[in-house]
Image 1 (cartoon, rainbow, N blue to C red):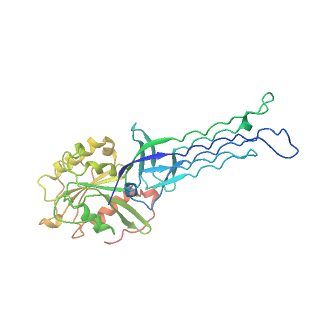
Image 2 (cartoon, helix red, strand yellow):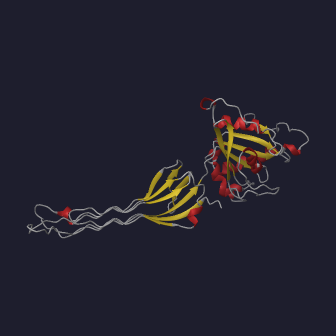
Image 3 (spheres, one colour):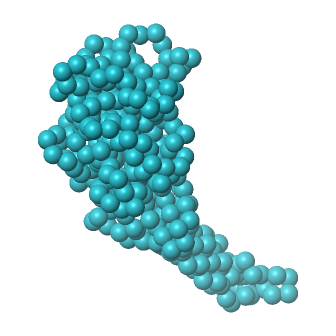
Length: 336
């Protein structure tokens, strides 16, 4: 099951209490104070793990706590620091304060860490309070309480290419044709109920990540259909690949409707490079011509994932977006 949004509660450890203690040794009748400080409480830390791809584990545990710091000891010994609690999350996790809605961190790199609840400071032992005029202080301070927060974790997939289209436009078929991903495919709308990722080889030692999200419908940005919950997953993509059924009544109008839904969700999506593909051309008698009214600057292709027509050209075009010439090596696109 794909889970991409959860709410958890975190609480860091309380600091250890300072100790009241006096030096009492043989031949030292008036030993001074030597109570040590308490240890710091354990932090709660989020750490990115590239092996994780969903927030599903948080369905079973929603509360995380750091360990308490140990109290101070005699002979001015500081208590042991409480054990940190490390919570592993997938790449692309956005961390928000659930009460304020404020973004605390955007975690995208493997091994990246952020302290979301700092452990409480340890209390001071009575040795800290000795002065020339106060030789035997008989008090210490308590450790500070740890931080407590309610966090919202939201996963935004990290992919190079995001597939955008209406239900049953052929997105899952394309993903399965160019990668090893095996999403559910059927001849009815809303076959895809959760995002799917596929690794697509575009050359020797070179590849890109393609993301297929549930199909959009008009009004998806307002909550209709399944698309709204998954639109966030194309926010990080480098290029958008629009798939429109070649047998549709008005491909250009469908394309413009998709653009409108993306704009309503996040206007910044319109600044991303995009490619328009007419899909399922194997169902037509002949290859369709470029639709009238389409902007000249928008790259256009006609493909058939089932018949594997136009896929080589499509991968070459996507590869140029993801790996610009100055950063890629010369290697042929594999024949599909």
